[in-house]
Image (tube, rainbow, N blue to C red):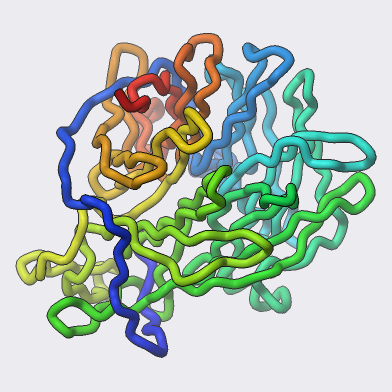
Length: 417
């Protein structure tokens, strides 16, 4: 999704962390073992469009673990490890006739949240239709979700319903616990470069939140040749972030600014700390482009590429971390523009791999991946952990209907050797 073009008040010089970002590990192909049923983005299918997954591990019975996944207007879906749908949760209705109904964009988990006198695991969802966060308690035995969103939760970014209707609303999401145990959510704002930090707060047997910090990522960059560059998008839009993850040990947030690249910034003590640093840029970084109204899209002049880009084909999308030890593991990012994924060493950010999920005997591949989630915990059918990726173009099963779903893979190939 190409969205951008509000110029920042200042032109920001390009800052890079010292990684070998241009190293090019050979492309590896892998296949999924399981896929979820197709979702159809039309009236007959309930306007369901797969987007972002999260993995809940049932510590009592790992075979009863669940994959939670957003379906935008289609709400939230819960799948078992065989990919079968176990629960479907609808979005909230529109508050008024001319207002937008709920639209669930991203999902993440907060384990061990203290709520109503007991500890529970929470699922957190960004509702981009209503500009809110929503919360669901996960039953520890069955994995069934129950809505525990406090009545009257505030808008995440908007000042009133009229602003909500413009849909510059809560979008990407990453949850984490700070060093003192406080639960937070990093939430991006659609069609802007803003990212908010929200503290999650128990209110009796329900959950609400308050925004405690706001980060604005750059939207204009000073290139090495001295020129200024801004990524292209619909007029009036900014370079938004969607894919997000926070390292649970270092409390470093990784943010995927779709048309720009991958950023890192520490977040602790209720604040974003210091200036964001670039981990890797998109291939299109610095390349001249213009918005074509007739095509309703950006036209990129690749022939004029000054050579300042990285490997990731825009959009930069799903982010997740395979945690194999206190500081060991793999950071994974979706390179949506070429239907592949790149991996980095979790601690050093050294590039470690490049892979594509392709069609196999049981499933088709993953194309246009928006979201990804991974766990290192061995699960039935996935002895080295589970990786779940979104497929934005599931092989059609019913004519020309737009079809999406999720693919499940054993995560063993992500472990560094």
